[in-house]
Length: 397
Ligand SMILES: *[C@@H]1O[C@H](CO)[C@@H](O)[C@H](O)[C@H]1NC(C)=O
Ligand SMILES: *[C@@H]1O[C@H](CO)[C@@H](O)[C@H](O)[C@H]1NC(C)=O
Ligand SMILES: *[C@@H]1O[C@H](CO)[C@@H](O)[C@H](O)[C@H]1NC(C)=O
Ligand SMILES: *[C@@H]1O[C@H](CO)[C@@H](O)[C@H](O)[C@H]1NC(C)=O
Ligand SMILES: *[C@@H]1O[C@H](CO)[C@@H](O)[C@H](O)[C@H]1NC(C)=O
Image 1 (cartoon, rainbow, N blue to C red):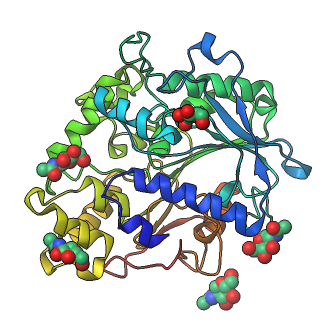
Image 2: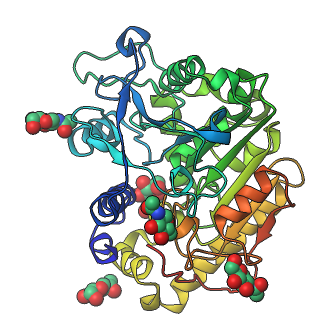
């Protein structure tokens, strides 16, 4: 699988493809239970549709035993589309992030796994994964549909309509609840966290998790304006601005209010940040420091042992900036941290990363143990790996 990924251009799609390959491998190799896809009822009438106009929906595995009244809702990732052309291209080439047409059942791993050994704290909860098919981190909302492109920008409606349906299925009586997100979905989880909390007022313990969603502005690193403009275009195209917190938009340009460093300090609900300080996606895809030497940067970021000293220096500077940015947000939420040095992106739904002999450990805790301890308040979990100064090959899928 690693080889397959490395031959791909440095593009967010590779992440999605790798996730799909792993899921499929698990299905075939270990015979895991499949989880059906549920189409949202009256999705079209509610306007809760994917980029291509197909109805939104989710995969749902019912809770049981002492987990019967606990709910975990996951927002998966898959990058963004920032222009009409990019969104059209997404519809054409990536139904997995733009559509629910031809959708099939798939298995749940990691934090969604039904296996108690792999997922001791959440295996028997009600577990939901919402389809990510809007290209805006579940937060856009544009009423008009251009008949020429038929593109629908409705991320926020998808989130709200699915949560409404889950409330009717028992989420409204939840004792415990988590809104988790991965990558672009993690940004959605951060942005929707307090809204989610408000929708389940009687729930005792509500918390949010951001996995690989701490996208830093890194304004002193190369191509900072490229990253800022990319987010600004995404926000404008998808009509996101009206959903951004005024705590951010009142003091800066809305284009900057997609950077979690300006958001997490104002989230009132407990929030866990799970991330690598050497986040592979940010380093290989969004950093792009060498416009004139792109192939060299691609070689370096797919095989870090081939990096030149100058390239490694940029990678180390990224990490220092990441840790400094984290420090600057201070003591307000996040209330839990697991910041590793593994050169990976996405941790939550791979068994091998979430909880295995080889999974990243800090303070000898796997991610599953760290998040379980934080969620149930068994201990304070603020773990940051400050030891190695190079990206670590953690030998996990
Ligand atoms: C769905 O399947 C049909 C028939 O195989 C195919 O023509 C179409 O392109 C598929 N659509 C998507 C979005 O995958
Ligand atoms: C649960 O996971 C463990 C550890 O990976 C594995 O050994 C076991 O076979 C799994 N159980 C089931 C029922 O799949
Ligand atoms: C800068 O980053 C943006 C967004 O990631 C990217 O589209 C652009 O190509 C980058 N610029 C250069 C010069 O590589
Ligand atoms: C990238 O790696 C390939 C294969 O190892 C090599 O042929 C090519 O010259 C490298 N490109 C750069 C710019 O280093
Ligand atoms: C780390 O945890 C593993 C299993 O959870 C245990 O076997 C091992 O002894 C622990 N190592 C240390 C150094 O505490």
